[in-house]
Amino acid sequence: MRTRQSILIVAAIAINIQVVGLVSAAPSIEGIWDPVFAEGLGHPQPEDVKLTPEGLAAYESFSADGDPTLKCIMPGVPLGIYDPYPLEIIQQDHQIVFLHEHFHMVRRFFLDGRQPPDDWWPSLVGFSVGSWEGDTLVVKTTHLSPDNLMWHSGMPFSGGSEAYVVERYDFDGDEVNLTAEVFDPSYYEEPYVIRSRRARTPNGVIFEYECYADFSGAQ
Amino acid sequence: MKQRIFLSSLVGTALLAGLPALAHHSTFTYFDPEVSVEYKDVTAVSFEVMNPHARLVFLVTDEDGNAVEWTAATQSANVLRRMGIGADSISPGDTLTVTASPHRDGLKLVLMTKVAWPNGDYAVLSIGASSGLFRAEPE
Image (tube, one colour):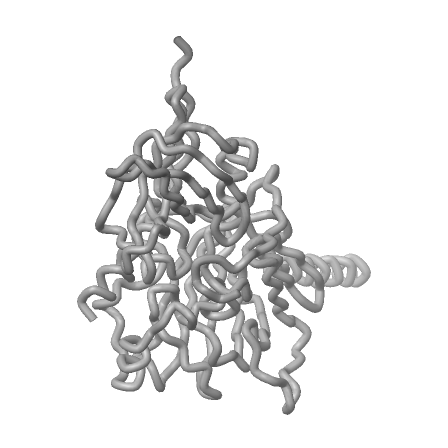
């Protein structure tokens, strides 16, 4: 009797572990994800954006020279968070890699708990740390460059040390919805929110994206 | 600020809502999306399919009968490729009808939004549901 109880207890513990394991497992997100165009996605309407006086001044003085993509430089973060090209996701235990077709941009989201070194320099893609909350991948990106834009229309990005981005990718099978909040308090009175959606495409392909600067005047 | 708000909403909303929009780089800083000009029966000089914007050079006959060279920027090579448009889709000497937004400074440089071939084929050069290469019905 005691043996049978022991077996049952062990079995119960095993099942429990299995269930916990299933619950905490990250979804499989590898593959090529194409953009989905739909109402309500994208960047906010300008009238809904609350710029600080400093942000408004940057907006008013915008020049297309401030758009890295017209110089064939990758858009980085936050500018490249949304793009209308396919994205390939590589999923590893210690990191998730986003391989964008657009400008060959590569982003790494570290899942192993590492933090940016003290001397990590600002860059267009910054330093990204990820974690899973159920089926939602949460990514926080810091160390971003001031040589960037929020959006091509001239919405500015300060790249200040206090600026950072939190992206939440809600995966649901072959669909993912992104809500990205850009915290840039010197230019924006409240977080700037970008939304997008992608669908996993079994036969999707990633093309090369070589680039030649053109009418921007950037040679 | 007013003008910039309009441009921003056009680029940001149209692109992401699947409405007709041009390349999403800062193109509207250079070109006026509110104006559309049709250049009928122009002659292609060259067509370079590249990123971030493909480039068509074409000849327009002016009022004095002179052939004047214009340049049209348009969608990226990758967007065109997915539409089925490649470098061999337009050859030197081809007769085309080009629809484009003019340059804000009056340069002979425009942003092509549509191109049509004499056989009735045409391409809507945007990103989203309405874009693509449309073949004429066979007679």
